[in-house]
Length: 230
Length: 117
Image (cartoon, rainbow over all chains, first blue to last red; front, side, top):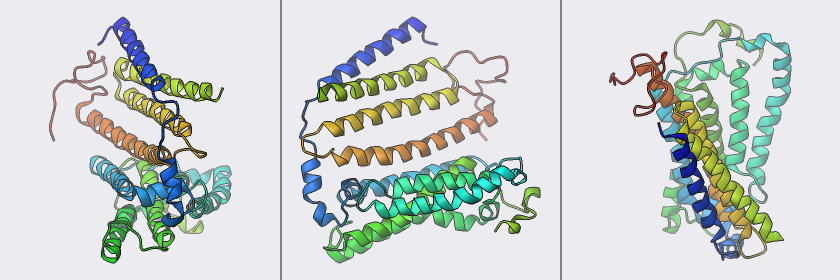
């Protein structure tokens, strides 16, 4: 173990170096704002961040979606998932909250996806909201039936990468450039990718909460009467 | 005056990073180390956002924004994977710390040996 004094000194030294580094940066760096905004009319969306994510730097985002898939694959290969032991459906307060909250969250995720074309929002924000909704659903015992359909889950997890890669291939064939959308069609392609990415991101985040591969096999005791809620 | 605001954010980002950095080295428990990495990441995101607001032009630079946006989701997933790895390590060896750390506590089982399944 590193002595406390050494550790403290080291941390302060790194802090000093970092502070110097950020303070020494130019006060008015040129940045890429002008370029990003200048090409915005051609990008197919009006939100510059979405344009960066899915047009200018689409490859980067494709790889990031692939990283999410890798992460959940790693988690699934390491552990068997665990559902909350307590059956939360017997808590009426939580259930009545979820009945209101879950539709609102799903609606919010869809709204964020749509608004990402011209205002802050998009697949990642919507995916985060959808992931939260899935966690709540799992906690409330509502997602148990779906958790048993592993092939469906796998498809959902991979959907983002699959659609993204397919769009890469199609745009390559259409325009000769990877992720170079045909003129005037950028918005449609971006929305297609984002819809698939949202599903995968939400599912990935929600299933990471389960912490492993969903348990297979016969229904658990808490799963006897899920149909009453469907 | 505007510059001062950016400087505060930049230095605060560096400070948050160092808090995580210190914890990463000082804490041996893997859970604490994973949390420390998350704190460090938050500091980096903070510096990125502050820098993007400082670029020339009327609007903030969207490129760092896009990087931070994806970075947050990626860091959540990396955390999930790290937690699964830590849990696996504990269930295989009983250790909650990596080798080379401080001596295992009384409840750390027979740490040290690496039993490969």
